Length: 89
Image 1: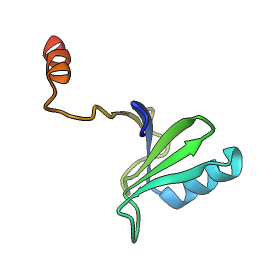
Image 2 (image 1 turned 60 degrees about the vertical axis):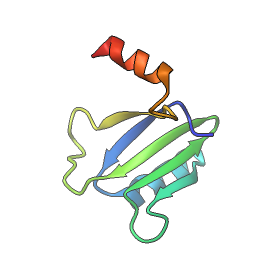
Image 3 (image 1 turned 180 degrees about the vertical axis):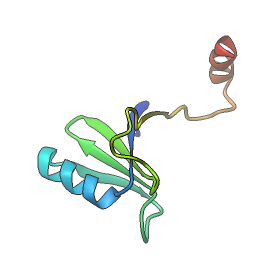
Image 4 (image 1 turned 90 degrees about the horizontal axis):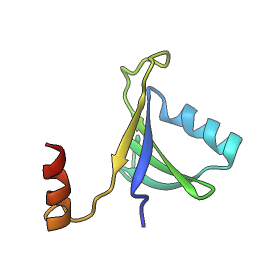
């Protein structure tokens, strides 16, 4: 089951960032989009946490903010999700 909230880092080089997290934390790749060819998104498991990595060739590595939060909400048509969303719109 995917994490409910997952931090996602934006990088110009997924292979470089994957190598870093695998070497530093022993990260394990748990998902990839697309499954074949160059990845746009890679999901990593680091201990009991998840981290997403997204490719953006135009991303500046010295930018002050390159982290997104991905919220896995399941069924977007559920009444609970709609009620929660309406409170914030």
